[in-house]
Image (cartoon, rainbow, N blue to C red):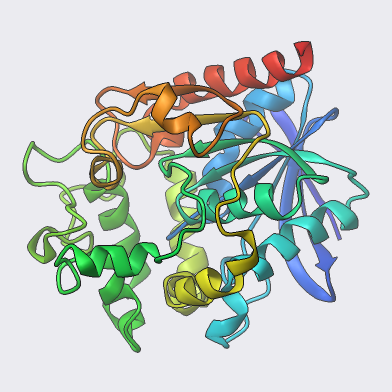
Length: 328
């Protein structure tokens, strides 16, 4: 059953759809060519409301799903059901459920990583991508996780702690940890105090000095707290635990590049991006992995949440990218 309510500037439908036999929560405003939004951890489809309003106003149909394991969507307990092959199947299944032949993908964090795999796996269904906070890296001979261990960071890199059994306990209660993750991963903390993915002392779950950062919509924060209070964090953390399974299952796609049009948006104060590329990469460097890259957008004074911390700029760049694609 669809829930028709106006939030922001565009009428929004919130509904449950059947995707490969399982329920997924979907929200959508607008009409026109489709843009499919994929969120990361710890988040829900509501993270994209500003961007969805912007593209709907520009003449597009914006669709966002609560990804597998999050919010109102299918959340299997089995870790092995969270590989990118499964989530790409969810993305294709959402298109099928809504009778959509193809879409442009927009992804953030894990949503960007899995959307990038979708570009490689199903170029017939996904014609372009905007990656937020995560640059694309093709499947290599060695996994990113083994590379990090080789660099001597196996005991320090945050994701290995997230993979451990029982790590969910550290993320409760949601009313404390959701504000913490939003604050510490952003550019709001004083210099030298924010989240550092290789420093366990500067972890994301420290108590935040504010309940809602000034750049975040309070309704969005309340929604996410309520969502994780209901579901817990097991499903979201399974994305970390399934990372090796994704690497193993993508062996046939080793070295495959993203050749469709793409855009990379990232925050200059995002410590994860600083780890991926300690200096600003050139377009030539980025195009080695994504030959269709149109541009990159470095956002000064912005951390890991560009869709919130710099919503107007992200919206403008997104609409510009979509318009460039249509013109071509």
